[in-house]
Image 1: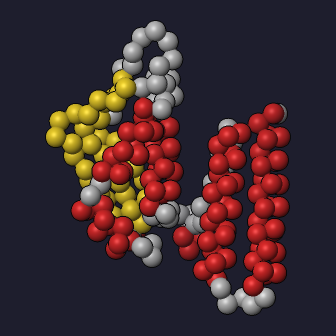
Image 2: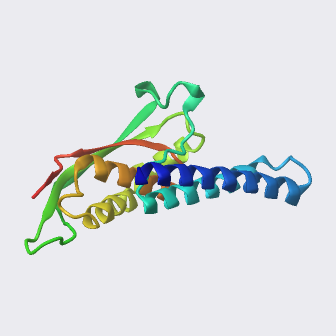
Image 3: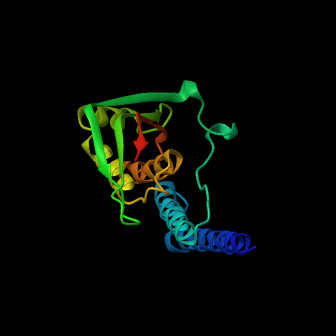
Length: 181
C-alpha cells in the first residue's frame, strides 16, 4: 500500500514537472524552433524523476520505446565485449563482520545501433573502456552481499553507464563469470 502511494505521488510529480518544463520552454522562447533545447530540458526532467524514484525505492522507466514496438530488438544491438586478463575482484560494501567480495572475468555491453550517436560512442568505447569498467566497479563496490545480485548490478550499471555516455544508447549488459562470495 505504501509503495503504491509513493508510485502515485512520484507519477504526479513527474507529470507536474513535465508540464512546468513545457510551459517554461514555450513562455521563455516565444518561438517553437528550438527543439534541441526542449529535448535537453526534458532529459533533465526525466533524470530528476528517475533520481526521485530511486530515492523513494520505486521502479520508474522513463525511456521511450523505439518505433512504439516495445523497445530495442536483437537486430538493433551491437555488442562491445571486454575481457579482463584474468578475473577482477571487487570488495562488496560491508554489512556484517565477514568481508564479502564479487568476481568477474569481463562483460559485454550492447549498444543500440539505431541511436543517433552510435558511431561516436562505439568508436570511443573501442578505443578506451576504462570509464565503463570504473562505473561497473563503483556499482558493485557500493552494494552489500545481499544487494549484489546480477540483475541489480546490471540495472544500476546500465543507468550509470547511460548517464556517463549522455544518452540511453546502452540497452543491455552481460557480466561474464560474475560470482559473489
